[in-house]
Every structure is written in C-alpha cells, then in structure tokens.
Image (cartoon, rainbow, N blue to C red; front, side):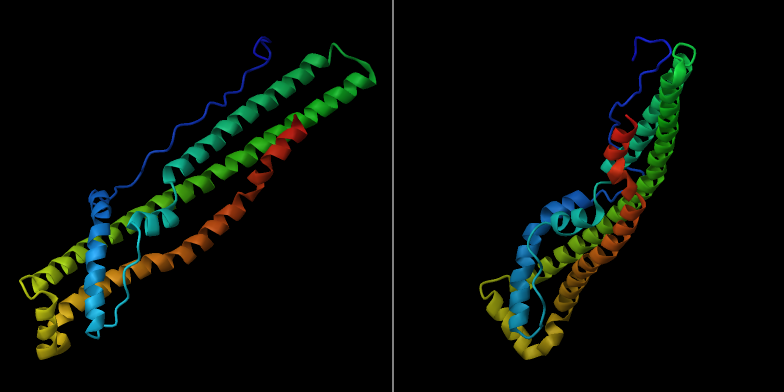
Amino acid sequence: MGDDPLLREPDLSPPPEGDDELRHDRTFESWDAKVGGLRDLANRGIDVLDGLGAGLRRLPEGSLRELLVEPLTGDAGAIRQNAEACHTVRDALVVLAGNQGRLVLWVDPRWGGRAGLAYGLDLGGRALATRALAELVEAAAPVLDEVALTCERLTVEVEGLVVECGEVLGRLVRRLLSRVSGPLGWGCFAVEVATQGMSAITDLVDDATRVLEIVETLLTMQDDVLAWAQERRDRIETLLDLPEMLRAIA
C-alpha cells in the first residue's frame, strides 16, 4: 500500500500508558507497607478487648491495596491508554476509508462495464462503512476518558481513607502497647478494666471501631463501583463487535 502514491499508510502505533491527572496522597505507599504489621498487632489487641466484652471484629488479612484499592479503582493509566488507542484506531480507519475512496476514483476510468461498476459501488460502500466505523470507535474514547478520571478520583479517595486507617491503626497499636508494657503486661491491663470498667478502654474501642468503619466503607463501595462500571461498559459494548465489523469491511 505504501508504494502507491495514491494511498496512505495507516498508523497503528501503540499509545503510551496514560499519566495521572490528579494529586495523590504521598503517604499512601508508606502506610500501606506498614499496615500489615500494625494490623497483626491490632488484631491481638482486639482479641483481648473482645475477651473483656468489647465485641469488635478482627481486621481482614492482606494489604489494604490488595483488599481495597485495586478491586475498587482499576488502572486509570491503562484505561487512558485505551482511550488514546480509540483515537489511533479512528485515525487509521479514516485513512483506510480515504484509501478505499481513492481506489474507486482510480478504478473508474480504467475498468468499465458492469463488473467495474459493481466493484466501484462495493468499494464505495465499504469506504462509507469504514468512515462510520471510525466515528463509532472515536465515540468510545470520551467514555473511557470518563472512566479513567473517575477511577483516578476514586483512587485518591481510597488512598485518603487508607492513610487515615493507617494513622488510626498506628495510634491504636501505640495505645495498646503503652497499656500492656511492663512485666505484668496483659494481666495488668485486664485488672485495670476489671477495676475501672469499660471506660478504661474507651479510647481503644473508639480507634478500633473507626478502623473497622473505614474498612467497611471501602468494602461497601464495591457494589456502587460495579454498578457504575457496568453502565459505562454498556455504552461501549459495541466495541466488542469491532473485530467482526473490521472483517466485514476488509
């Protein structure tokens, strides 16, 4: 195709991964790396508090990124890359449609009769279909851009909650360790609760409750995110038939 001056070579170079567009919490990565150890210590404390009647649930295993961030937010950079790929494919289809139209003009004076007419009509129809397909692919790009931006906003929101969770979790662990330090450890702590009642552990229960609330908030966000994502998927579902459409106009 490139040897014919009438025809153009479509560019289908893969686009780079998209960049972030929003400010992210810089402390997220460091907190997420520490949270495993803090969680284990907090769960030991929660077990003791439950033994004293606090009625708390243990924190789930796994890193917060694995449990909460990745299942909720997706990869905004990869989604932006797909949006840019829609532009690339659209431009390539426009070039292809132009090439098909040029072939019609090239054939017309050289190939007469019914066969030439039929070929010209068929190729002209394919050129129109290719151009329509190009605009269909282009229409998916804004949807993917919207998905990417929403995913990144959600990532920033989740990162903020994770950082807060880490801060409260760290405070809970420090408070627990301060109460159980010394030779008597947990036994002395149990005596304190026995003599002072639940008021002796109000601060610990409040911190543990807040951590659990944050985790629960993040987990319950999954249903809303899945419903939102399904709506966007329905808007670009026609792209799933793109290979078949391309074969039809080839």
